[in-house]
Length: 71
Image (cartoon, rainbow, N blue to C red; front, side, top):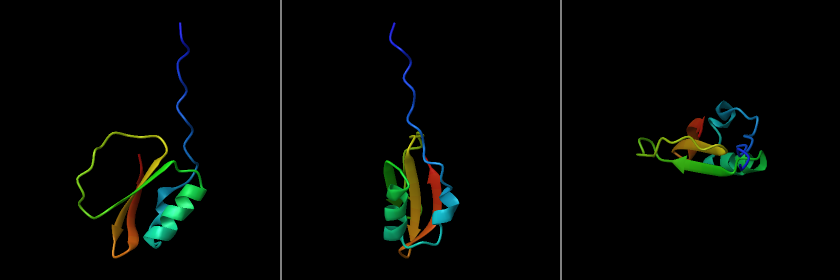
């Protein structure tokens, strides 16, 4: 029987720390901190809601991160 795979570890990083940053700076910082996927989104974007380990989502308004969340 094959072993049960272990999901990859997620960076120990709070999404709240990205709010207010310029979107490009926030994306660069998130990648440096180990996020595999960084997804900038416009306000009200229709997105899939499945949780993905290692993904950080940014809602960007006026070039700045207005909201950030994992998954």
